[in-house]
Length: 230
Image (cartoon, rainbow, N blue to C red; front, side, top):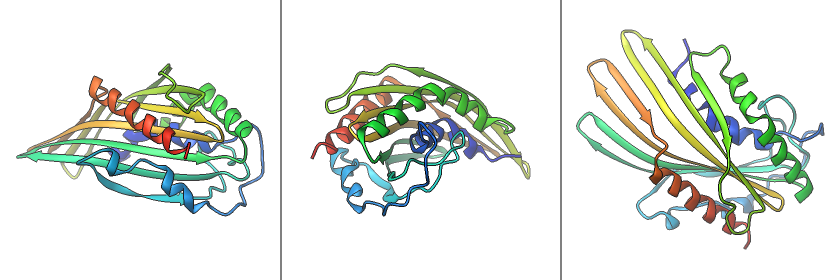
């Protein structure tokens, strides 16, 4: 039986698609650009948040998202910020995950962006196929923030229940991913609000797509795109 971590398929697939090509191309052979770590969101922009995943730059040779290889010259960086509060058996967490991909040219970035919007729904369904996760994805609109030329959102609704050694884990809810095109960059931002409760031998986690998380996503997207203009 699969683990509950499969619940994040929708969000991670949306981000992973950004490394997939619009057309067939050779694997990336360029050296990862270390300066990309200076172009992502930081706790300075979100007081009280901590770094959950240190910015890490990679030079992807291939992407498993819907098959295909990353366009030559693609460099990516990912980071995550968050804040957590606990009260007894209840834990509330708010987080932001950013994935930033830099392409060899604005044209390659634009083509990749267009492809991602076209195939993301099918990709999410394909990624979840054969797992215990029930997942559905829809593509929607979002305001284009300053510095970006295009934007869209992907909303994923999913649920899974897993029992191992008499312990049950349930996870369900909705996640909204914000994807922006800015020159030769594509930015993916995933805000999250989760509540986890322990009751006996059952762990229940619920993710909610609220007005707060949507404001947080747009705010993070605004900061993320603005960082690319410097």
